[in-house]
Image 1 (tube, rainbow, N blue to C red):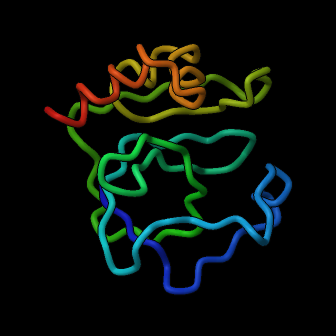
Image 2 (cartoon, helix red, strand yellow; image 1 turned 135 degrees about the horizontal axis):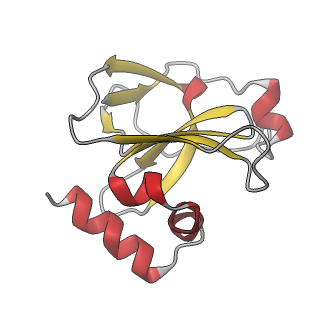
Image 3 (cartoon, rainbow, N blue to C red; image 1 turned 30 degrees about the horizontal axis):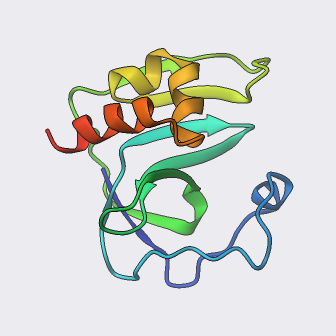
Length: 126
């Protein structure tokens, strides 16, 4: 799956409720494709796991600021529905095995835990 930043990306009210502001800047280049490494629904918001620039680290970004131009999902992706009453806010996740199987891994990736980043890096070099 591949996405690109919309020409005029706008955040939704839901994204503002989740902590984004009108001053939030995204460092994605326009008209450039970015591979999606995972998809999640977190606190009702659809998000993509992306790397903003070469050599960067993965982060979750609101799907609404992107357009999708390659909608195919990798054949080796997994999916897990965690439920609506999950205390972490993680409702559902699609992606590689570790991302989907463990909420601790998902959170560790967000918190930049070295072990979790290394697992991610192994997946993107395959």
